[in-house]
Image 1: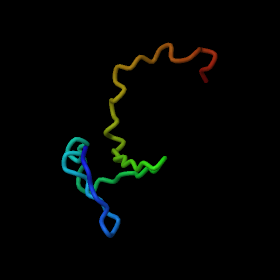
Image 2 (image 1 turned 45 degrees about the horizontal axis):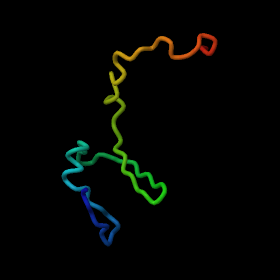
Image 3 (image 1 turned 90 degrees about the vertical axis):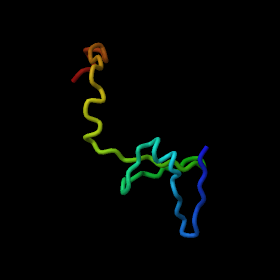
Length: 69
């Protein structure tokens, strides 16, 4: 498990092993979520990176015909 320390300016350094495993880049923005005493950094990904993520997914029989618009 990687560890870091909060600086006097309340900054933290993301350890190299975590940056590399997540593919973080310099200047990349993240969202910070705080819940139940846990802080989570969520990297923002460009919308274009989602292109094709559902390729090959079955779209039939997802819902009843009566529920369709």
